[in-house]
Length: 199
Image (cartoon, rainbow, N blue to C red; front, side, top):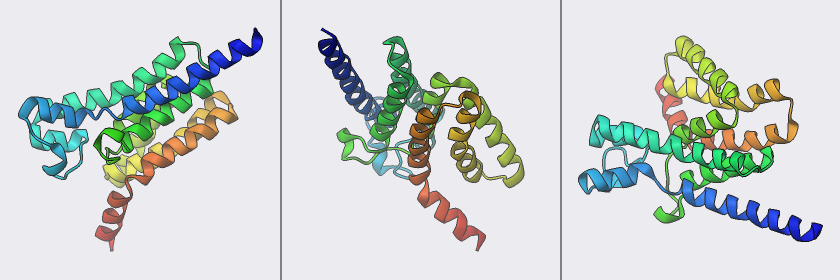
């Protein structure tokens, strides 16, 4: 009976992770642009399907709807893991899966967004105090560097460290590291552009 229960739980975890990836692949910006204007956001503005480009192409409604959708889908995935009583490391793997789905959506040829809003949404639900510290770090770095990109990079890089300071949980911290690194990795073009401007 015990083995059957274990297999059932493992199946639920696998289903949760697959669903998390698929939810991440539901690109809010793409959907909003299609519904509001019938446009393909991938070939308009900067070509990115995140909130900033949605705002440029669609105006404030596009920005707000895309931002909210990207935040909420990651938040919903982590919340579902909590409500289902899954261990915190499974919740974080769901968080990782939804971020991967957002960055590399199967529905759009594995070309997605940059994951910033989804990262914020997932972290807020998983450990809101860590998210507050990330926000504080962002404001601090922005006040020094006056660059949204640089401030965001430093703040997101510190997220696993903040979580470890608060909770002292090594396994969860180790899972948070690749989540942060993925979000940082997809900003590489912005980083290069920033460095070129400084030369």
